[in-house]
Length: 415
Image 1 (cartoon, rainbow, N blue to C red):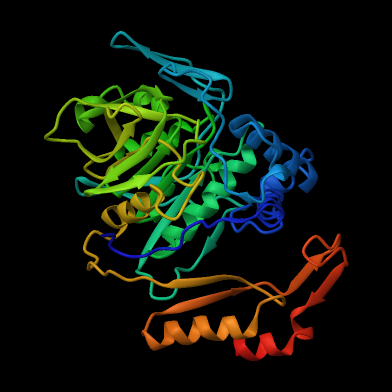
Image 2 (cartoon, helix red, strand yellow; image 1 turned 135 degrees about the horizontal axis):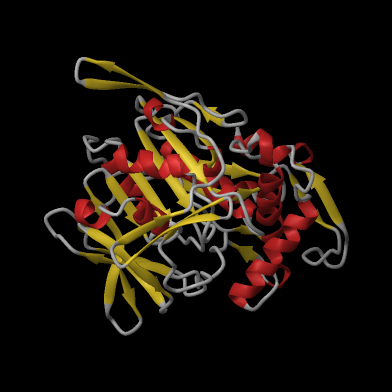
């Protein structure tokens, strides 16, 4: 059983979900939108974002979004290379490690941020200021006292997708305390010192991850959760990664994976997800352990998530193609081990009565809610305020449009 029941992505009508993603990517809804990105002259319009979302969905499913009435968040595009070159990518310059040697080309940039002072023999690090444009928020009601930094990718043709994944991450980490979010490219040296944990969402292949972030991840003692791309930049920067962590990445596995096993529970993974999963090699079982396992169609398995000390690596983005029994639940539960390992186990659930609007049947609504109430089952009702059928598809050819206030019987049941 999962330790807690956290909010999950549900299915939505095509128009509503795509518009929500588009508004998020354009900055209209996003709590994680950076000021720098918002000021960019080439910032995408909602129509451009809709077009790119449609293209990405078509690439992965063979259909356009308008051809189906239910839509879920897609995965990142398939990786450029199944086995990436181990290198640091920063502003066009790279640090490459091959055959046990390290060759570095230093970028023409300076790093400012944290300062270090000495007290006796123990250095004291003063946290760098959060970059302008970063967004912060308090924890959800009943959240803990933690403070999590969420970093996401924001370059390339699907930069908006990284931000949407960042928002989904915020939804989860806010259950553990306050949060701050911004693109990883805005990270400043020492910024981690101001937080109790960090989650990096690597959705863009070869995103230029700042060297100060790579160095701070290597040195920090706070919990680090790293998803999907650019792990090869971290191992290139830290030649001792494998020896220290007891595992390393192997390459993207694009096999058909429809199951992820976690704590004895078989969770689903949609076959539409063709983004690939980064495979791993455990070199020292005393230091690293497999947290969840991906199962191929032929029954063979490989690590889906690995943990070593304070570092947790997840081989894909768990927010894409989510269903009710998806491997997303494994990721949600894994956050407890990283962000609140002493949390008590609680088997809780909430029934969500979804898509209730002006066209709802008041008698049916009363029957459902009365039954749940009689069984002492906690529930919520998700309501939309307007019903439209402009072509009369479900109303005998008659165009129909009305709002909730025009259906007092429905409003009475909701009260």
